Length: 280
Image (cartoon, rainbow, N blue to C red):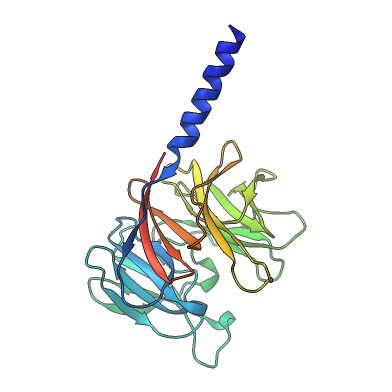
């Protein structure tokens, strides 16, 4: 009896692990070399940048057309979408300015116009145009903080020693994934817990139900150039990691979830953009 129960448990675990797989990736045949795709909530567009975060580009996923929005160097990170999928936000600075002097611009897809906002650039990418609470790294303490945009009240989310970066707010606004070295932690946004270690790598996106994080883990033989990279799925509740890709000819990085568990990601080896579906 015990043997049958054990076999049944192993079978269920195997089925669950096998279910968390990717469909065969399909290339989006765009002209040029791009990276760091961030899909719009409705899955119709994605933001892209080029090597060394050069510029911000808008990809129409259906027509495969790429439109340059800004060609300034070093600004292709931290961009984010408004929940309506019609507006996105990105950082921009002058040619001789420091990144600390960056300004936030909003771009309307309908009007094809970029306008400067009064948002602090540190609030990207957690700002989505609708949320009252945003998360960000304090540039002086390197701790993660949260700010209520309505009351302007700010409080600490992390209080441990170390340098934190790349805070990613969950869809329900209650949790935040943060990075400390190679570790990924998840904290309550209200600062009420000590955090939970989820895994190692770089988390890039929450699943729609906030049960999973997706990300990647890259490797380097010389400490400079990438020798490999794979997409990972992090089970937030159970603190488990599942490797979704295992390839030698591609360096899968920067996965972004959208729609019904669809993923857009970049191959850093070729500069190509792919889409796939996660089978949960």
